[in-house]
Amino acid sequence: MKLTNFSIFILCLLFVAVSACSIRPKASALHDLGYANSDNGITETVTQTDNTPPVTVESPKWLEDSRIRYRFLFSAPTQVRSYAMDRWIASPPELFEQLLKNSRRQWQTPLMIELTVFEQQFDTPTSAKVVMHFTVTTVPNEKSARSSKKEFKLRRACATADTNGAVNAFADLTRQAIEQIQTWLMLQPS
Image 1 (cartoon, rainbow, N blue to C red):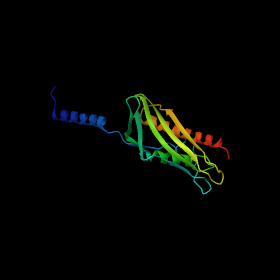
Image 2: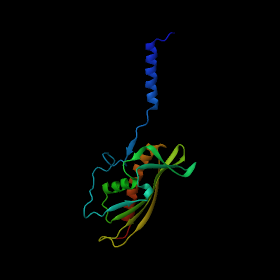
Image 3: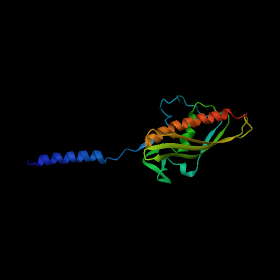
Image 4: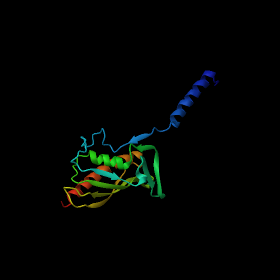
C-alpha cells in the first residue's frame, strides 16, 4: 500500500488529535463545602445581626491557605501533601466559619473555635478518610456568665480515595460538626 501525501497528512492530523486528548492537562477545580447555591438542607442564609453572638474560627498558620491536604498513613505518615489541581475556594477555617454562620442555628453565646486538623488520610492506596479536630470555647456574655470548652475529633470515610471523595466527605463531616456543637451547647448549664 502506497501512502500519498494527503494520506500522510490525514494520519498526522489524527495522531495530533489523539495525542492532544491524552496529554491535555486536567482542569483545575475550586471546591467549597456545598452550602452555597445547592439544595443540601441549608436553604436560607442567616445573617449576623447585633444581637446574634459571633462565631469565630481560627487555626494555625499552616491551615490558612486553600490547599486540600492529605497524607499516606501507610507509607509516609509524617509527610503532608496537597492536591495539585484542586483547591478550596477559601481556607478551611474560613469555609467552616461561613458554614457555621449560614446554618440555621441560633448560637446563644459567642463561640471561639480553634481548628487544628483538616485533612484527608489514606490508610491504604484505595481507602481514605477525612479528619477534623477542633476545640470550641464559649465566651461569657450577658446570657451566660460561664465559659465552657470541648475538644472534638471527628472522622468520616471517603466514598472514593481521591479529591472528590475528600471534598464530599468534608461536606458531610462539617455538617456533623455543627450538629455535635449544637448538641454539646444544649447540654451546658445556663
